[in-house]
Length: 160
Image (cartoon, rainbow, N blue to C red; front, side):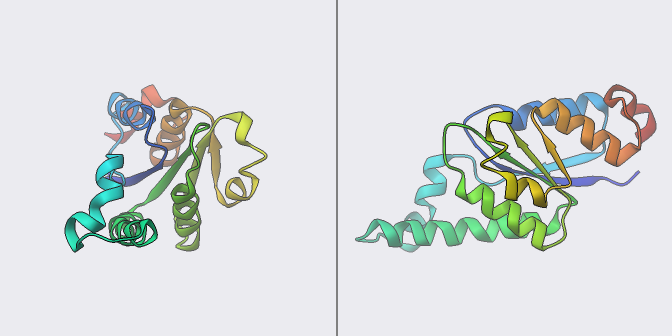
């Protein structure tokens, strides 16, 4: 069975990526994962660290955003499925961009967020092929999409 490439975008302050990766490993799914730079400081400072200091915060952020976009757009472009997580504590504008970019490329999009964000994210959810509330649901969605089984635990057998 071919290996699927899954891009995990969005919120960086919880363990949702680790839970999806562990669940996929436990289910024996043939997947590799990619993600944006999740070190907040490195992501914010990459532009000025590599290309030089800026006097105004706008230009510092502009440089960093452009450099991060090189990674993000490339990895989304190479992905088979894109999962975008929206947390409830922070505004994830970059995650909204990633969701829109993936949808524009025709990439299957899974959106992950708490039920309390359903109204706020209705347009993003509208672009998704599935909307999940837990990382475990994402694993089950991946298992079904990849193996055609409903039980993530039995996905290991179907993948072989």
